[in-house]
Length: 351
Ligand SMILES: [Zn+2]
Image (cartoon, rainbow, N blue to C red; front, side):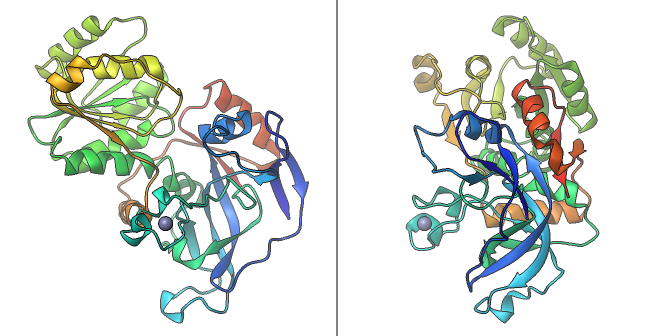
């Protein structure tokens, strides 16, 4: 089968022909139909994660995976209802199934987690073996190129916004800021509207074209931050919504300068959920965090339940997409486009 593999950190992945992987009795072999491309693919290649998890090569890249059930392992319970030909999405974050985090369903924060696309098997390949419990059957009407990004770009901000909602940070008299309108941010704007209980949604970004998408997806206001001070932006915010700070922030970029800006705009008792990982360290003043009783939520990808909820929204046609489809042979040029930030929305490889 075709597979895009990272054989050496810092070098371009190689498009090769390798054997179709074996699958375990509790696994399902999925014939991949589409796989989204993520900034974290570039970060993996560039070695960003190595100090946290030095994954041995070769690595088959690609973690936003959807496809069709090809073969079913013989201990997969009949009750799971899978049959050959079913359309499926792959829930990321395969836990050990035994720890306290797995036991409550948060397998993506399991200390022994495995990730498709960050190890021997991944979605930039024609086949991938997946433990049956990490597959979700989906409506066959849904397009593969739209399903793929919903397993990360369209999942990660969903979990982050659920955390803000569950913390009580959203409501009719509240304002939520969405920072970074890239692959994740376009979905974040929509989830902020869907889950925000009428909170006003403000999108912040640098790129006019991306901010236009935020408006199309229902942002109440967009604010370009390019070349502006925090004070200027606070004034603009005040003109737009009648308050100069944000009750909630969903940060889809995680870029140090943008985080400093977003924290400077966070209200008393504000909640900040970060799902972006562009930078590695931030320098922010401590006193306002303590004296304003602010809360920071780390929010990592999403679990099976989060993805099931996203799929329910997709089935109801509640989610819109900005997608560029490319072919397997074009993986490397698309990785370069992500590296330079030149992709609007999500780039998705389709077989
Ligand atoms: Zn676990």
